[in-house]
Figure 1 (cartoon, rainbow, N blue to C red):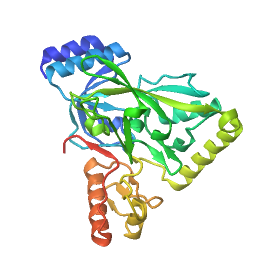
Figure 2 (cartoon, rainbow, N blue to C red):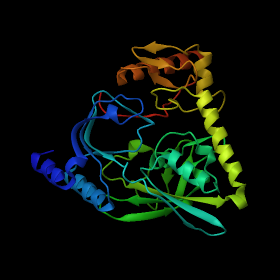
Figure 3 (tube, rainbow, N blue to C red):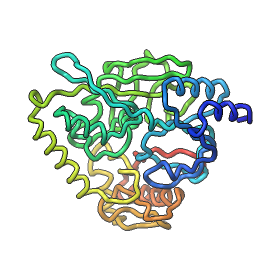
Figure 4 (cartoon, one colour):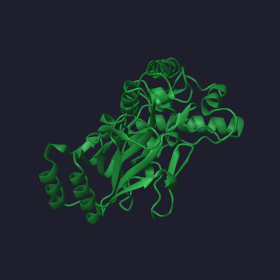
Amino acid sequence: MDNQFKKMLVQRFGENLRFNEPMSAHTTLRVGGPADLFACPGTIDDLIFLLKSLHGANIPWFVLGAGSNLLVRDGGIRGLVISMRKFNNISESAGENNAVIVSAGAGSHLAGLCRYAAERGLAGMNFAVGIPGSVGGSILGNAGTAEGDMESVIRSVTLLWPCGRIETVEKNRLIFSYRSLVIKKEIKKEIKKPEGYGSNASPLLIQGDFSLVHAELGGESSEISASASTAMEKRMRLQPAGLSAGCFFKNPESGPSAGELIDRAGLKGFSIGAALVSEKHANFIVNTGGAMAADILAVAGHVRRTVRKLFNVTLFPEVIIVGEE
């Protein structure tokens, strides 16, 4: 990455471009080394300029949402991190068959989308109340609970390709599975979870459209708000407060959940440095203050080895792990 390229980006983005930005400031785990460059574009034109420039210079990029399901290693991220936080508009329009189409920018917080729906008496989003993260990351990871997931409400997604082409992809081309999304091969490059999101050849998800229903058709407005409050109270009661990335491991396809297996293994309270397996929910690894990414990864590694030894079950991370050691 030569100085001329950096100068060009500075001229375009000014204070919205930073060098050697600590990723610990942008993840809910509060760990992670520096990104070479960190940009916060505010318009589609800015995004197009950025992607074309990076693609032309063959510089890798990684897209950051809310940083809630993300662990950045201590060596940081080479290339450029694109923060989507300014793409946070939420609006609505009339859909077919009495549906209401709610459009949310990829940088919107999922909590904000849930609140928007509840305040307007729109049913469909209450399954996601209390799930941290951005709309973009939640779509790509098919975020959900026992009550539902993003697949149940998504109508379409809008993609921006590095060449500047914007494309809307309808639900019939979206293939969701547990904590993942791919797009049918009419689009040559598959979209997966964010680890595939940072390739120069891949498109960037910039918006999701959701099909919801008015309260008078899907339930009283007061019932929707009450249900949202109940869901939030349940999450607060069952999940630990503090610095975490949410559930660290995916649940196995069958049998006990990851949290149950870790609990049965007697690993609640296990710690390395300031990284701790939560006493409240065994599938949470918490930064109790001052942990390094290496500490969290060491705890996760011990958990995986122990569960595999005791139960012959291999746990796979749900948290996205990126960066250099």
